[in-house]
Image 1 (cartoon, one colour):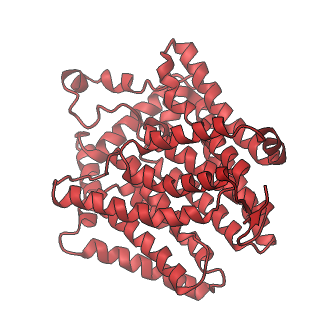
Image 2 (tube, rainbow, N blue to C red; image 1 turned 135 degrees about the horizontal axis):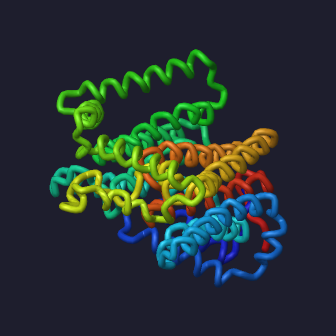
Length: 416
């Protein structure tokens, strides 16, 4: 990749390096990253017009997807007379466009992202291990909401696994990062992140080992499945505890008790479906899902029940219940449009035989896939850290992959 040896380029490279650490291991790191990007945009606005024109085919679809989210969110705010704070988290989707522009303009070194991920994963493992072993926290998550934290850890583990290079050191760093991410997730206990990590890493094996044959690929998948089974069978395994709990919760739900982790989700998904049936085009209002749970008699007496939740714990159900069909289309666009852009960049990198570009694009697809799976049990825009992470990492990877596709060199410096 060609990157510019200017002060702005070095600062941008430093921001790429710091991104994983800020999101996983620093209190309020998401806000720090958001502020840093905005400040960098204000300081380096000159030349942005040329950059936008040069990468128009990338920026226009991304911008339209973000515009769709903002338009539907503002329309819902106006229709239901909500406070402007209701659109706070949706507006943070703009970070994807700002971050992408920043990367396209200053062309930071993409290697910085793969340097930062091991630091972030190891540091957050130390943090959650301390919280679990010393503070006896059942769901350690550093300083972030547990499910949002787990989804970020899974995504960073996958990006690290997609790093370029075929030396033993490269493979060791890739598998080592994935193992550290897995250890963090075991301590954290978020089952959705376990699923997203396990499912998404399978297609990434073809990126990690480009010349792998089908028998070897199947053998690796079988070995990974056996490892998962061993983790489950291990005496006192937290994996077995969390997995078995799903069946127990479902049984209790069928018996009429929804006051469990899984039962609460089943109940609120039923409520979301009924809300969508009643208001298919407008929903009940952006961020107003709590109205449904607050109307439950049990929640009027006490908010301590597990089903007295603020959102639907599912991206699709939340969008349908609160913003109707337009909301679902808008929310899905911030996943599917980047996926299409990454897929297009992946094809271009393969035609150019550009390994680093292929790794960047594949990492972007992995983030989208893992986020979609994570969104089955979480709402991406419900937590600031979650939406800042998703928007930030999508902007970073799109920008880095696009620059790499335009300047497909392994390393190098372009004169400003």
